[in-house]
Length: 119
Image 1 (cartoon, rainbow, N blue to C red):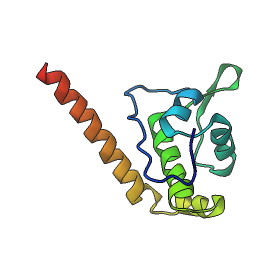
Image 2 (cartoon, helix red, strand yellow; image 1 turned 120 degrees about the vertical axis):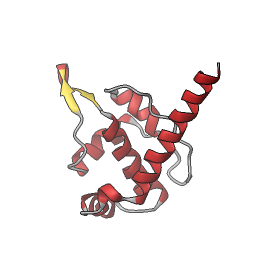
Image 3 (cartoon, rainbow, N blue to C red; image 1 turned 135 degrees about the horizontal axis):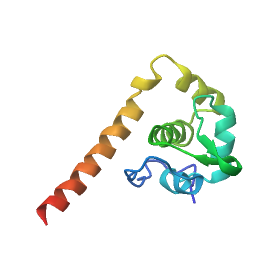
């Protein structure tokens, strides 16, 4: 599924829905579900909504955060502790990576919209 040694993997666009299952997030972030559950324990900011039967439902900001964690660990070579420090810093929300992901996502959504409008 994901080779931690590969970098700059093109991740799929995040659909415009409110909640995502762990399977959907796994596909969107190219990280296995058991890794997502582990990251929930390691990164206090990552708190998906839990509903019936303890099922996890992630929101868009969770998906972006998971992509940021993935980038820190797999592409930038941080340890879990180092990535946790990066994520908990005051400037974590202004982090360049997250900003780039948001811009990239918006661009893909706008390009999709443009294709729809051209039809």
